[in-house]
Amino acid sequence: MGFDLDSETRRQLGHRLIDRIDEYLSGLPSRPVQLPLDQRTFGDLQNQMPEAGQDAAIFLDHITTRLIDEGFHVPSAGYFGLMNCTPAYVAVLAEMLVAALNPQLATLSRSQLASKIERETVRWIGERVGWPGPFDGTFTSGGNEANFSAMALALATHFPGSVEDGVASIGARPVLYTSSEAHHSIDKSAGLLGLGRSALRRIPVDDTARIDLNQLEAQIQQDRAAGHKPFCVAATAGTTNSGAVDDLPGVAAICKRHNLWMHVDGAYGGAAIFADRHRDVVKGIELADSITIDPHKWLAMPFAAGVVLTSHPESLRQAFAVSTPYMPRIPGPEVLDNFKVSTQWSRRMNSLKLWLTLQIHGRQAYEDHIHRQMELARYFADWIAGSERFELAAPQTLPIVNLRIRWPGLTEAERHAIHEAIVLEVTRDGRRWISTTLVNGKSVIRMMVISYLTGHRQIEDLIIALTTAAKNV
Ligand SMILES: Cc1ncc(COP(=O)(O)O)c(C=O)c1O
Image 1: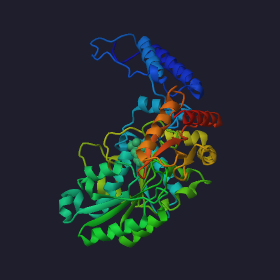
Image 2: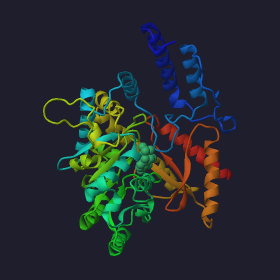
Image 3: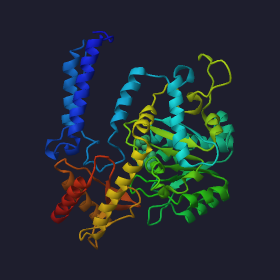
Image 4: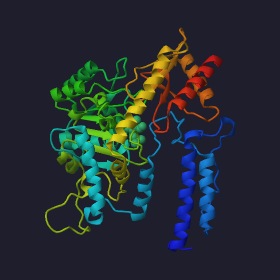
C-alpha cells in the first residue's frame, strides 16, 4: 500500500481513531494513571522493521489499545505529577491539522498565515507580561530549548563578538547564576554554549526555596574580583520541586546594579500572567530581559510547546540570524523569517494549538483554570497543615505542595525512606501518582495539581490514601 490513501480509507481510519480517542477521553476522569504495581509492564515490541505493511485499520486499533492498556496516563485526573498536563481537546485537533498541513515555519514565504499566527501568539503572551517597551520571542520545543535560547541571547548581547569568534575571544571567563533549586536545563545550556557547566554558579536558597539574594550578590562580587565576567542571572518563577518563585524584583535590582541580563525561567509558573487574580505571584517578571514560558505545562497544551520572549528584540537576530541563498525572497522590505530568531530551521507550528484554544475558549478560560488549581492546591495544603501525621515542608505558592511526615528525630535518610514507602503505597493501585523529591536537600513528598480534570474528588481520594499509607509505615 502506498502512502497516497484514497479518501474513503482516510475517512474511515480517521473517524475510527477519533472515536477511540473520544472513548479514552470520556473515561479519563476515572481512569487510573497506570496499571497496579503487580501488573505493570514495559511493553515489549517485536523489534524488527516490517518489510511489508499490514492492514491499517487493524493495526491502528491494535496499537491504540496497547498504548491505552499498557500506558502511563499523564492526562488522568489522578496524576498529581510533574509538570505535564491534560491537553485541551481543541489543541489536540490543532495538532492533527498542523500535521496534515505541515507548514514550514522556518520562513514566512512558505508559511504565510501560519507564521503570522505564531507571531501573533508570541505577541499575545508578551502583552500579558506587561513589558513597557518592544519585545519579541519565538516558539520552541519546550523549556529546555527556551532556556538555552535565553542564555544564548544573554551571551550574544553581552559579548557580541562571541557569536562569530567563540567564547575564547571574550578574554575572561563568562559566568552566570541561578539558584540551587533551578532546573537542570540551565546547566545544560552553560555546557552547550561552551561556557562549561562550572561557569554556572548555583546560589543557595533560603528556607522558602528562593534564591538567597545576599549570597547572589556576594558571589557576583567575588567573581568580578577574580577577573571573571558575570553576564546573566537566571531566576525561576515556579521551581520544579516546590513551585517557589524567586524574589524577581530583588533579582532585577541586583542585575541592574551589576549590569547583568535577567532571565526568568517561568516554564511552569510564568503562565500565571494569564490570570489577573494570580499574576502577583510572578510580580517583577516584567523586569526580565528574557522569559521562558511553556504552554505544554500550565496552559494545557500537548507536547511540544515552549516560548522564549525577550524585551530586546534585536538580541534574537544577534544570536540566531544566518543567511541562506537557497530560499526565495519575498519582494519588498525584508521580512522577519522565523529561522533568523530561533535555534531551529525546519520547524513545526507549535503555536496553532495555543492560538486556537485562546480563540475558542478565550483567556477567561485560563483565568478560571489557573484559579481553580490554585484553590485545589490551597485546600490540600490547608489539610496538610492541620494534619496530625504530615506537615508542610515548604510554603505553597503555586499548585505544588511539598509535605513531610511529622516524626521528630529522624535522620534525613530515614525520613526519605519513609516518604518513599508512603509514595509506593499511595501509587500501588495505579489510581493516583505522586512522588518524592529533595527541596534544598531535604526529603519531601511532592504533589501538584496540573490536570484540568482534577477536582475535589481526586484530592479527597489522595488525602485518604496518604492517611492510610502513613498509618501503615
Ligand atoms: C522550571 C523548569 N524549567 C524548565 C523545564 C524544562 O522544560 P521542558 O521539559 O519543556 O524542556 C522544566 C521542566 O519541567 C521546569 O520545571
